[in-house]
Amino acid sequence: MSEKRGQKKKPKNRPITKRPAAYFLSSEHQAKVEREKRLAMYAGVGFFMVVIAVVWVINFKNNIQPASRQAVSPNTQLDAAALNFKEVITEAKKNMADLKQAMNNSGQVAAIKLPTDMERRIELEKLLFSLNDKLTQASSTGENE
Image 1 (cartoon, one colour):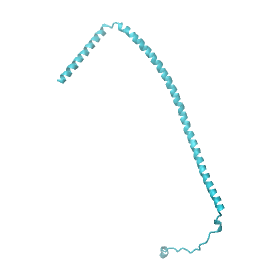
Image 2 (spheres, one colour; image 1 turned 90 degrees about the vertical axis):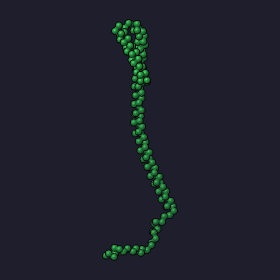
Image 3 (cartoon, helix red, strand yellow; image 1 turned 180 degrees about the horizontal axis):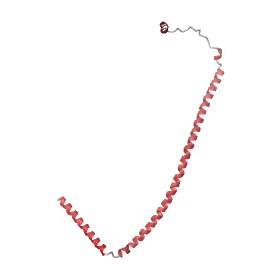
Image 4 (cartoon, helix red, strand yellow; image 1 turned 60 degrees about the horizontal axis):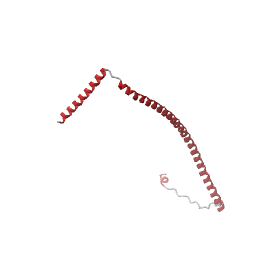
């Protein structure tokens, strides 16, 4: 048995036979088969191109709708910003009128005499500032020497 396992099988001698006549096609029949193959190829390519185009259109449509919805919201935000801007401008004009009125009244306020305690306080602050300046000058000249 071990001898059979190691031996290679010899090929059987089969006689070479010719193919049956059905395998040989006429040139007209071969041309017809080639046209059918080409037509099948174009049909397959066309089918897949149509599928790709349909998927692309659906995807494009789905992407455009959210973008158009987002485009609506900035317009409403712009309108709100414009309205707020107008409100701010009217408030600023009102504040400017109040400021002008206060500036016109400031001359009248200066004419009012300050109480004596306030005058003393102002004089004391002036004196303190002048003393502070003299001390800083003295300390800076002392450090330079």
